[in-house]
Amino acid sequence: MKKILLLLIATFLFNTSLLANDYKVIRFAADPNYAPFAYKDSTGTLTGFEIDIGNAICAHLNVRCQWVESDFDGMVPSLNAGKIDAILASMTITAARQKVIDFSSEVFSSPTAMVFRPGTELSKGTAVGYLQGSTQEVYALEVLAGQGMKVVAYADQEQVYADLLTGRLQASLQDAQQAQSGFLRSPQGAGFVLGPIIESALMPSKSGIGIAKGNHGLKALLDKALAALHADGTYARLQEQYFPGVNMFSGQ
Image (cartoon, rainbow, N blue to C red; front, side, top):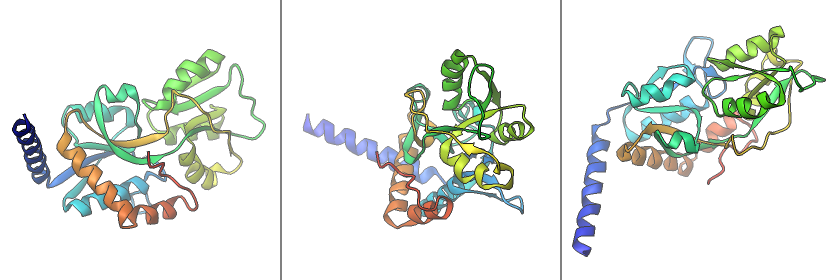
C-alpha cells in the first residue's frame, strides 16, 4: 500500500513538472477598465496592480505574459474554451465559480461598497449600476432589486461611472478599494463618496487567479510564484505603490 501511495505521489509530481515545463507563455485575461487593478496609461499601455502582479509572476516563472483584454463576463467562457490560460481580473472566489473553474491562492481581498453623491437617498426607485458577471451582480439582483431599487448591468466598470456622472445612475456598486483608489481619486470622482462597507455572504472578499478546472500544474506554478512575491517583498512594494497604507492581503 505504501509503495502504491509513493508511486501515485511520484506520478503526480512528474505530471505537474511536465505541465510546468510546457508553459513558455501564460495567457492572462484582464479587464482594462478597472483602475487601479488594470487600466491603460496615457501611452495606451496596460498597467495596474494586477498587471504588475501578473508580470512579476511570469518573471519569477521565467515565462512570457500575454495579456488578453476582455469584458469581465466573457472571461470564464474564454477560459473553458481554451482561449486563455488564466484570469487575473479581481475575480472573487465563490462557491458558484468553483463549480466551473479552479482558483490559485489569494491575490488580494477587498469588500464591497456603493459610490454616490452625498445626500443620495438609497431607497425604492434608486438606479444602481454594477459590473455584469461580478459578485456584486448577485447582491444587486437578490437584495437591492428586492428592496425596489432599479439595478442596471454594465459590460465594464467605466461605463457604470460614466452613467453615474451623467445622473442616469444614482449609485454604483463595486469593490470598495477599486472605487477608493480609482474613481474617487480621479477628477471625475470629485463630489462622490464611498458608502459603508456592505457585509454579505453573497459577496466574498477574497480574489484569486481563475484557472481551468483540474489544471493542477498551472495552479502549483501560480501558487508558488505568488508565495515568492510575498517572500521577496514584491507584493508589499506593489501594494504600497497602488494602495498606500492599505493591507490588501488577508493571508487566508
